[in-house]
Length: 417
Ligand SMILES: *Cc1c(COP(=O)(O)O)cnc(C)c1O
Image 1 (cartoon, helix red, strand yellow):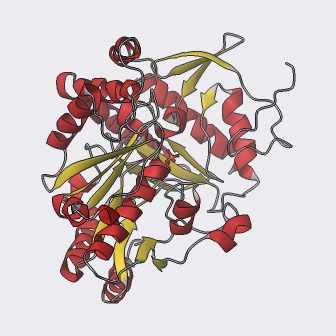
Image 2 (cartoon, rainbow, N blue to C red):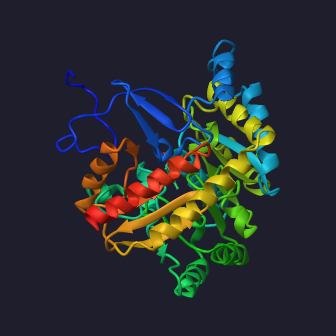
């Protein structure tokens, strides 16, 4: 293959010069340009929910592309955005009433931070500090890197990142320390918001914590008048076993970020939702209180049509049954993984299954690239985080397909553990 001019994301070209060229996809499978089929066990970076190229969503994209491709969203609106927003709100906690569109998970979090700071500013309160959780991940833009865990990913850019306050991850048995740390920070007069991934930290290493801790954190925020921002970019759209991870805790956040599964994984789109009160704090005849945020493609009609078609599937098809089925197969896998002596920390969160090969390590563990090659050689798209191997499959995955992934994880433990 001739050398490509393309610089790929999260790719060290000196170590991985060759990209696998993918020609097509259907359901849970990719097909490369040699005709080899690859099982997409991580939903192409966590975005594909029902399966690739779902006919209903593809049809909606086709129809919309021929009707209205794009229109400026300031001062204008369109049916795909209106239809999607109205339908989405029906599925979400009632206090969330306003929908702001953007294009990616990172931008949905940036928007959330701006909404939170704008809200306090326009109310005349000097609150600007953000509390986050250790090992959190919220994106790769400068603002979201600031809020995420610092490390090898962020080191070169540290001089640009703003300061945040961190509470420890609520590890089993140490939950109270997390709640105490939050309580102390929430009392500070300059704290504005708590930004967290509810119940599951994704890129930080597939770490899970119980719903009662989330409920307690929400209560602390409410008690001290600071905003709870739920980053459900990864956990939303059924990954947790329910529509939102917050649903497990009966928590209604003040601000909610959704992206990844929003179009079923077909097109980029994101939304940040908020309570009416946050919208109203910007509502004024004073133009200085305008929410000054947009991107060129805000609420692109084709992406919105895909998102609406995705919600139609949620409303009209047995999506929950597929999620329950995948979760049940993962529970069988969990039993097998937990019994392997060279796997540690086997754990499940809804449709997600994770374990460490050998002892715990870090993202820069030399095992990562070796494992990647090991799974690629078996035509499985499994992309470990260091020595943490996880499956985050589309909901159309069959029991046999997932069992084959469990087999491969056990085999990897035999070889590398
Ligand atoms: C992936 C992710 C993001 C960033 O989303 P992008 O679309 O990659 O910008 C933010 N938060 C969480 C929890 C994520 O998993």
